[in-house]
Length: 164
Image (cartoon, rainbow, N blue to C red; front, side, top):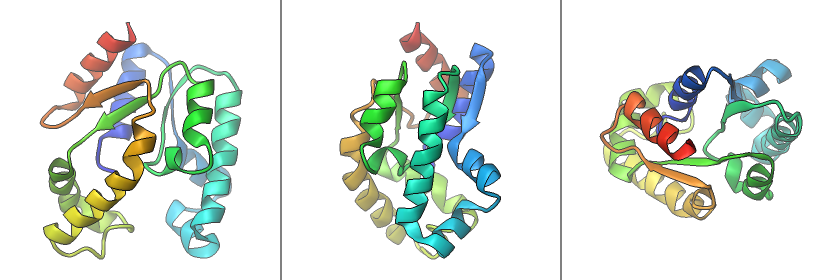
């Protein structure tokens, strides 16, 4: 959350003139309900099962696309291995805890999972905990791009160089 996955994916797909799929938006459209409401009504485990189903459908379709995933997607079941198996490239937009705190504090009211965190310290602690738990999955990607203090175009430029 806050690393720029959706924005970078949109810009990259535009440069490569290819399809972009935001997995969360795809799920919401297919299920007719928001992600936050799926969490509230069905719980996280059921959401993760739904997420996996759509992830499999998209990846097994073999249609070339840039897919932006939710931050938790690679961390459940064997998702990161599955993603690596069915994708040409997997990318981790690596962003420091402090950078994420700065980016997310501004927009935390629009993100239900962190809206209750009223101070930067609490948000920073939340991010640190989640990154600690998730980095072992994120680091299994094929490409890692550091995003601190970089704009979308600079990140996309680095990605294009690595993909060439």
